[in-house]
Length: 437
Ligand code: AMP
Figure 1: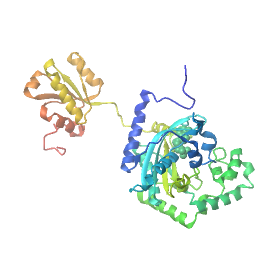
Figure 2 (figure 1 turned 180 degrees about the vertical axis):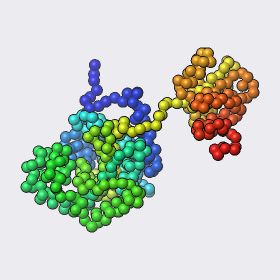
Figure 3 (figure 1 turned 30 degrees about the vertical axis):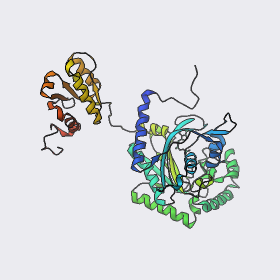
Figure 4 (figure 1 turned 120 degrees about the vertical axis):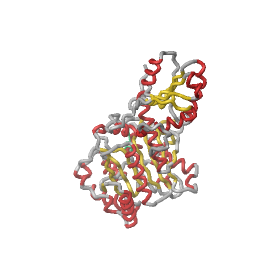
């Protein structure tokens, strides 16, 4: 037997509905914010990630799946989405589109060679968004609001928005210098990776998972204290916009994020949920004003985020869901060979009107037919025989209220739609006297 690769998993039929529901929410919330989907290949030339994500990041140093293709080119399975989106924008010259900023989202599998554990896989999925072409602090706030609204739509509560600023390139350089000065006498107290990071990019030291509780790191100088005037103004504006929207947030001066390309705003949203365990960060993101240029595009500011979908599904295990038992709207029982064609046509018309319908295909007795309607959780049972056909009527039983009525065929669709919501009570849907009709 050939087994799946370590760190990967199958989404089996019993679980696929959960994924589809999650993907529906991604699409719906993205539409509300007017973000459009972009789909890029799952592998790219390795150089894209080396330059885009950063040579000094853990992802590029230790986690990418790199291989040589049969033509001798070095290619990499994408470890994240942003570099590919930016590559595509440059290659397709989308930065010249009339509508700016470009507001794009993506979702799909990513690949990182990490130690597999709960919530951490070698093939995992991300939903990410990028707003490219505007340096406005309002769009930083908009991106954070988009991520928070998505979590609200999933009914995920107990979330904490953490926000910080790394400032522009000048602020970052100044800060790196101060940090190096501070770390120099203490670096031997930190792990081997931190010693390497200290040489290559000291900002990475603050993101260390091994030494995160080490007092050397806790007491280190913070980027927010070294912002240029312009960077400070940008951050203040982001905060003012979040206040105006009414989102609760916390300024976390230690937040830096693992990727090299961030400038200005960085943020994470954590959820305090039992089902998540220690992996409580649901989304990370921020502004990356230098990435487009560093991948040979024009100087273009951008801001974005990425959610891990596996972690969202874990978070959803702690969420009280409405009882959404599978249901259908109508189940048609046609009695007698002569009325079958008519009944099928009726069912088809109801489907074209957006109603989920099924049909009785078995020659069972009436009790068996009703039993089948019950198993399918049909809201309405439609009973149509020769007598009804003659009178151009149909019997409709609302299984939730138990009320059965004879309805003119031409009114059937309206009757069903008007009575779908049980709050109508006993109204037949065309009384023209109740509030709803
Ligand atoms: P990053 O691209 O590292 O900022 O990660 C963004 C989000 O992707 C994280 O908050 C996680 O939810 C998710 N993520 C990152 N790496 C993995 C992984 N190996 N397995 C599952 N989810 C991951």
